[in-house]
Each structure stands twice: as C-alpha cells, then as structure tokens.
Length: 94
Image 1: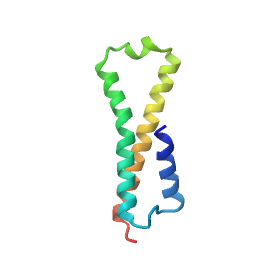
Image 2 (image 1 turned 90 degrees about the horizontal axis):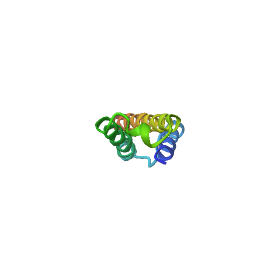
Image 3 (image 1 turned 180 degrees about the vertical axis):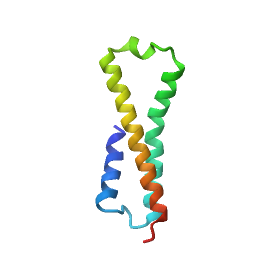
C-alpha cells in the first residue's frame, strides 16, 4: 500500500515538477513521505535479522517469503528515491 503514494509522488514530480508551487513544501512532503514509507520495510528487515534464521521460512512457503522480501526492498528503494527527490527540491528556486 505504501508503494502507491510513493509512485504517485515520484510520477507527479517527474511530470509536473511541483505539487504546491513552493519548493520547500514539495521537498518536505517528499522527505516525510519517503521516511514514513521506508520505516516500515526497514523495521521488517531489522525484525528479520534479529528473529531466528528460519522464522520467515517457517510461516510461509519460500515463494511467498521471497515475494514479501522483494516487495519490502521495492518500497525501501522507492522511499529512498522520494527522500532524494524531496531533498533536491530544497535547492530549487521558484
């Protein structure tokens, strides 16, 4: 679910280059959205590291576990891009 607002923000910034017309507000929205969305898969990754090594594989099939892991990585990468795009808005003068 977090991938949808991230993709919408990144697509809007790609095509329109501004959401509100004020670069600082656009940047703040991007950084906060990216940090919020990236916090969930990062927490899942930390949980995976500190739980038992087979904890993920016991509850689901290997295919479902791999899909879950790939979706977490995709959301984490999209959150990173949103933070980068949002931070880049702070240097833009409108």
